[in-house]
Image (cartoon, rainbow, N blue to C red; front, top):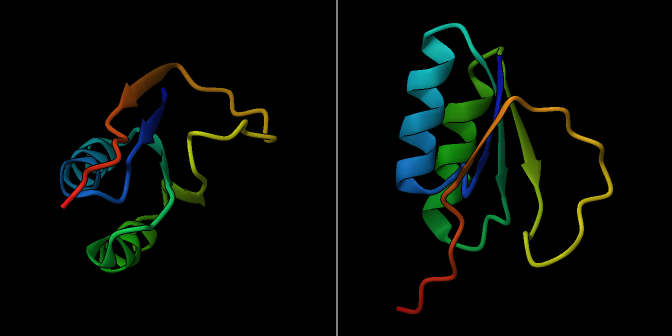
Length: 80
């Protein structure tokens, strides 16, 4: 099973991606990396062989044809 997580480098997205990947699933983590902590989370995600990280802003169309079985939408624009 291949799972797409929008906001995949956020706090919840990263922890979910790691948990899912450790169970043997393939994960695509999509994030725009606008928050400073997301860059560190990217490093954690790329250490797992079954996680693919893609830099993308979900407000724009995605050119890649990603075949997934499930989408977990966690992306949000949070105003500080």
